[in-house]
Amino acid sequence: MDMMATRTVQWLGTTYTLVLSKPETGGAFALVDSVTEPGYGPPRHVHQKEDEAFFVLSGDVEFWTKDGTVVKGPGEAVFLPRGVEHTFRVAGDQPARMLTMLTPGGFEEYFLEMGRNKYRIPEDMGAVAGSAAVFGITFTGPPL
Image (cartoon, rainbow, N blue to C red):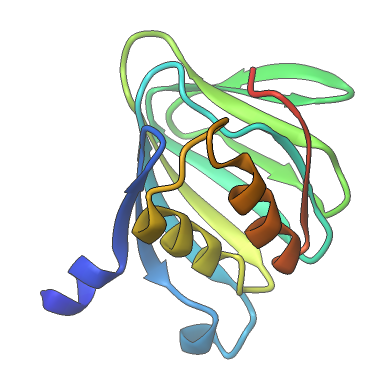
């Protein structure tokens, strides 16, 4: 169980648990289990290296792209290909739990780094954005 403890971090209203990492899948993908508090979500951003697929297990999540917003609930999924500006936030008054697949793997390490360093937004945005750039992420705007 100690290994899983090192694979779980809390950052900005979300608890991230690394289910499968890049090394465990031969680089093909990573799988992250997250529980996010109501009203929370990341700033708008673009991934250059990976696609993301979100599967909502519980709660309601509002996803945003330039094409509009959509709310997904339990049993529903969203696919966001690399290069598409996006964000999301937990809608309603209940936390949301999602499984997120990152293809290929690697970006999962970003969540662990942010949680270990306990970076804050906007106070530590320089460090957050600098680390994100290493992972091929560009922040493009505020959260929803």
